[in-house]
Length: 450
Image (tube, rainbow, N blue to C red; front, side, top):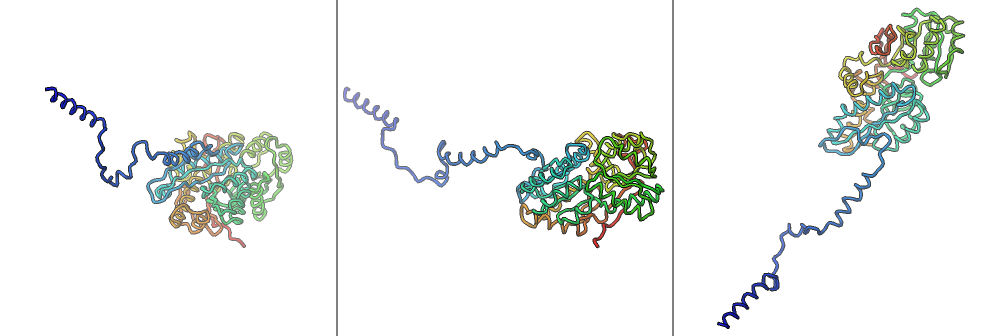
């Protein structure tokens, strides 16, 4: 009995030792390929962690750009390409001309959202890069240097002021960066720069059209011409003067001024000359106070100006002094474009105010930029270079926009260009500016260089 009990105890001890791993292990089998590739939990993480965290952490802490474009734009789809493409705007977002400049930027923002499917369908992300040029050539030049340094910017929608565009264009041209202008009218913009395009007419036609209207419709026999000394204002005033003299209208004064508030030095000689017509080549922010003071001083001459008058701020500044006056324009109120009705509603919904002049043209400029970039991208098989976008612009198919169908001559001018003679509502009310009616619409081929 004792021997049997001892054997039983020895057997139990052997079982316990086996359960604790004290016995030799069995020979291992060959691991499967999956087992070889899959590290055990907690193993093999050191190198992947370095790859996963180093670069993204740097991106996450990068300072946002001044333009804030990282949060704006149209997301790319599942197309064959990838990358970010930017379209820049340059316009005055601050200062006395911001009423138009902000409209250009906001319309471009709508364009990025609504018109860039040709790029997003290819897989690209499209962003807006807005710049405030403050209507100052030196600011536009500084911005242009920043724009060309950002290689993701492949097209510029701008400017409002021809003088600013002419200062920035040499910088764009040095890098073959395309500019599509919704507003620039100085002839030199397209004549001197092969990368410049515009969807509006030119001052060397707008000025003469104004003089012809003064002669044929207003019956003016004498005119006093004022300009604001800018490339735009002096240029259009000079073209008006030349045509007026050809038509036999007597030019009794031609004066440039940078005055913005008190115009006694102009009003005194105008009162003495007593012209049938006063033509103001410049911008509404300067012309409005002048027109108001002229009426307050008893001047009864007709008023006429170019598209720089085309903003409800003119009526805010001048009141009923401009009620019923005429102005020429290379654009028109959005209500004059049947195909722009949806844009007008979308703009009102997005920004809580009516779309200002030149905003529908800015929207179309984004569409034209998009068409050229997409054409270049498909040819390049990916993100195109700026030179490739310029080459695409030079062979672009007609673009059907909300303000018209656009084709360009070899200089980059619209062919034909459309010019309007518009009349301010009789009350001179800024709230009714969009009701200003077209007294005449003229289509004309761009001038040919001699």
